[in-house]
Length: 274
Image (cartoon, rainbow, N blue to C red; front, side, top):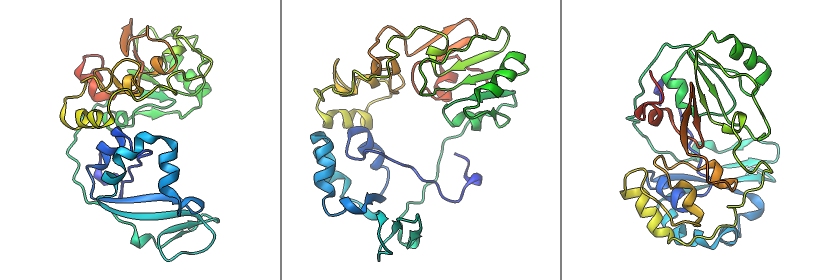
């Protein structure tokens, strides 16, 4: 985290009442909770209605200072809110923690190009990184020229996307193996979405807090089985019903990341040079 690039940093937690979300929340004493106007009076029933597993962390979440921010408010409320015209009211009442990030990154002046979605810390490691967003047509022009040291092929929602060109000289980090490899289910269906909890949610939370990264979080068939790898990242292939593709592998000059593997792990594992 480069403190010179921003004044405030917003960390969004989608499900603070699940084991992984609760582990993040534990790092903070002050939380802004965003709730829509139509659900503000029945918020607890709504959350627990999504999943009964959330009840295990409901009280733990609220044992800190919580400031509610109401969205879709019909008018200016007396507390922080966003009205139906997207105007923010009373932002001075939003709460925050002062943190001092300690993570530092190796820096490299190597020429890097990237497309799609990829871990943002690559931009810290490679300040000269040129990102094409999701403009694959412009990216491919540079990709074929190979006037770069490293190319990052990020992920996108289109599992049918195929890249016909494979660089011969430069290194490639690919976060969408299906661009080059057959990776199983392409229907877009997620067979893991209805998996049961099986493993006690409290034990998963404690493993995240106390055990080293890579410790298995849940038993086979558990909802959190997708994190049972040495990086604790969602295994894309398990989500798509295919367990045959490794979470990380290399084929010639292309490193395939079958999950959101951060650059620090790729460096540690010897797949990425800085």
